[in-house]
Amino acid sequence: MSFSMDLFNLDGKIALVTGATYGIGFALAEALAKAGATIVFNDINQDLVDKGMAAYKEADIEAHGYVADVTNEEQVGAFVAQVEKEVGVIDILINNAGIIKRIPMLEMSAADFRQVIDIDLNGPFIVAKAVLPGMIKKGHGKIINICSMMSELGRETVAGYAAAKGGLKMLTKNICSEFGEANIQCNGIGPGYIATPQTAPLREKQADGSRHPFDEFIIAKTPAARWGEASDLQGPAVFLASDASNFVNGHILYVDGGILAYIGKQP
Ligand code: NAP
Ligand code: GCO
Image (cartoon, rainbow, N blue to C red; front, side, top):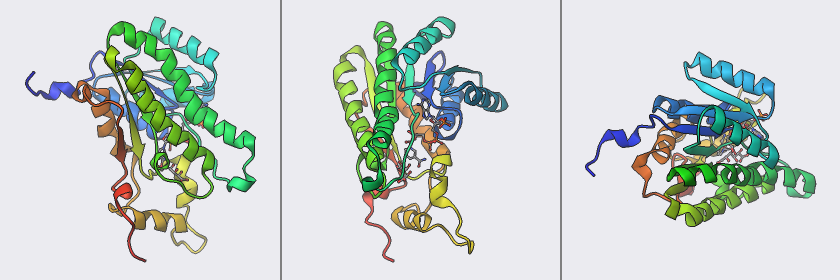
């Protein structure tokens, strides 16, 4: 088949992006919509779904919003069945919903650890398991798991998050292995440090107006010498959601400005 930019076209495809009311999820849904996909998203309560619907309307994107907690297998099953009835069978899944708890390990309760694992690892498993049968029936599918620098590296205070995102990297490789023959590609995107509500505490200005120490740290650790924007993830997401990546499987695409390649600027 000769190359054509149509390979990146998502016309006629239905894409579910979990937790996509704002932040990275919203940006990825926006990109897939601009590439032609119909957007479906969920969030954990109606207020957030309504907020998301308003944001998609504002961006002139036709979206279908549903209330579903990704950790609740019954809710997710009912949600996916409703989508299949009202919108159609899902072609593309982006497992984006996630939380982080920044607590020193010796102060972190098992309940806190479990909650992060539940949302960031069990959730993607539950949602992927719900959408895979439809993809198998259709004869194609794309699953993109939103991993992290913490899929490869640790740091203080994020034990639960790093364990979850490390597990999500291996879940990605396992879905690749188990469903490649059904023409389903499962890959990950590993964002670097992105300016969203989730990282706002790490970028807060100090009382004297100076940068947060962690902000300085990330700038020094990133060859691009800047935080990422959610928009930096849009092209990679369209690539992995499209026919342009039909032979890319089990890969974690790090979109990190070079952090993983760099020892860091000498102080
Ligand atoms: P965010 O701003 O906190 O957004 C996360 C979204 O997930 C929110 O809409 C949140 O809803 C939703 N969510 C949380 N728990 C959920 C559940 N149980 N069921 C359904 N939805 C749920 O985070 P973000 O920065 O956009 O990050 C999105 C993804 O990228 C996460 O998986 C994160 O780990 C990953 N990531 C982020 C960065 C970064 O630097 N920002 C870098 C690498 C990876 P609520 O508003 O109710 O919490
Ligand atoms: C943190 C940050 C990171 C980012 C992201 C980096 O506290 O270290 O929140 O974990 O969210 O995951 O890839």
